[in-house]
View (spheres, protein in one colour):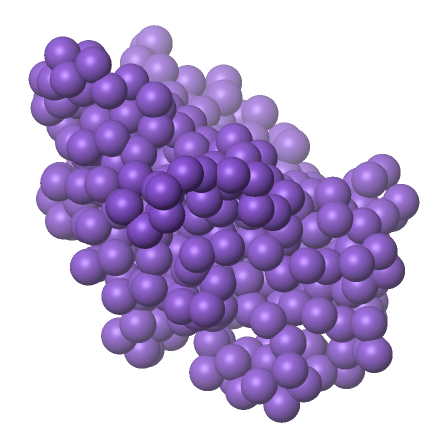
Length: 380
Ligand SMILES: *Cc1c(COP(=O)(O)O)cnc(C)c1O
């Protein structure tokens, strides 16, 4: 019997995007920092408690902005996981810095805070924790290490909007944090991102770098009588119609998150019996972390042929996918970075991970079919 295809992702829209984009068009303010950008900034600042939020074109450009702000020099080192998206590393490599790849924890797949200190050298300038699947890294020890060694923290919270670590919003704990509003993220505007500036002393300079190195922001606030070239910079701000799209999603952030958490919980309950039978491992969320239902992954037992499992899921019209190829094993990662330790968990866990279809609108019956199919494949 032919069954219907279940895609991996389907972007969710609230229904209000078009109206807000129309408003932005009619306001004739089409470039950046218009009314909708300001609404998004206010929302992000209120929601996270950051000193200043700045919309960018993507999380990638927010990380680029963060790396420029830190004034890194050639040969400076930034500690980060290898199990992450390329942008975490690229932002710093573009400044001439060296990514130092440290292993991940076996439970959350997040940067292993217990291995950070041994990776620190006289060239280390920053730590870039990545909150995988919207589950917080162990930020208390990471913040303590950064204080002890006078290092900056740049949180890659691309997947972390609306999630907390010990009650603190992800992205708002380190000196700087970044969100992604890419189509594949919980809250999105097609492409989009934001930098959260938590250290208030970096706020004005962040604004200047984002506006081509000018003090245009201060000019529009009436703080200076003309705007001029002040610093290095680039054009990192999105147009206001893009912010209008995002505003529709931010207004609906509670609803979007609760819908996603319901889907996550259903998977978690349905897959418990398979975990009990030793056929897979489910995600681990520490009690002090509130996640946001960004994605649902399972870890296959060691020695399982993952490609074969994914192939059989595809044959059953189910689009499940793997995730990161560890950066330290990639051509550019080997060229630009260095490793600390053997990265055993990174290699092992990344090879055993599959992500299941996840989008608002995914039906319980579809989730049942996915879990039953997976059980049948793994139980053979
Ligand atoms: C999605 C993602 C990024 C990149 O986000 P863009 O908005 O597409 O630039 C960076 N880091 C992580 C961990 C991500 O998941």
